[in-house]
Image (cartoon, rainbow, N blue to C red; front, side):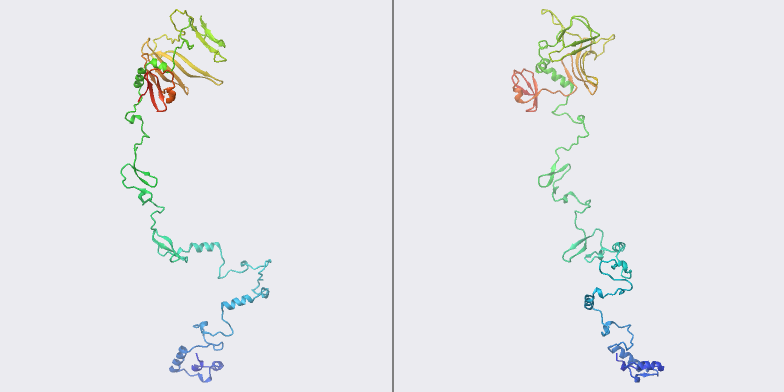
Length: 444
């Protein structure tokens, strides 16, 4: 603004003197009379159209001006270059001990070294974890410079877009997400369900899972043989077992199991000549003992050192006489004897802890006083269990499975002089076989 072109009013001598003291204003521009409208308009026009050159002596209001309008004088404006040069030329030694108020600045390692603890916090706040945590908690992901996630919808994802070098909001189009409740097995790349029907299964063919037929769809875990009809594999019945044994004949069984001449093998085949009653009789390493008179013997203790020193009961008889029993085992009762009772041989073991029963052989009454039944009983976990019974007509019953002698075809063919009626289980072909007098035949 050219101060020489404006008109000023001063109503006192002091104001006139002060205005006249400004070199850019002449006394002719100052009057004590009111300014005319024309003079006022010219002043405003001058202010609006003039380029203002200010000096410290011109006293103009700077409220609406900036440093851009003010030419640089002796007070220099800030520039990065001037600061960098100034800092580069400052030596630590040039900083006085009281250069910053009363704080001694020491950039070395001595005890007076300055730290942030020596400088009070003002508008530039110091770092604290609490401030950072609060800042992070209050910051949205949209605040990140490489993320654009404005107005997301439920299920959207943030995916990196290399073309824009940033993460952007997108819809999730991946069907194999963690939640697969809406998916089906047909979406799996190695599964082909073409042709699937009721009770079909998936079976691996070496490269993929394909539809196949379940060859066994019946769950038998809760069933028994009572639920399964009998087919070509017959169920066991006592009648079938008895008929099978009767058909084979007891003579064939004796031969098959080598039950030959008992007397020639040294077994008792006749009765003693005297009754054996109560009492205890000890046999110690005596070999054969002949009982020819009444002996009080409740228990016979046979102490044998070797297998040849075994007690033997012998009944003497004439070579021309009739063969008689060597020993009778009698069950006696003062009342009528019931079925199942009869003579019995018990077998026990005794060791350093106790004496235990292990089994018995009995011939018991079976329907009439003059009819008997052979019974083999064995002890299992302290309980007697009948495992075999043979009736007077030769029919037999086993309470468990019957196992024949097992051997290979080679072992079978090595049997010297096989007899008709022999039976085995051939482990080579896994079949039961019987000898008919000339050849071995499969039972089934």
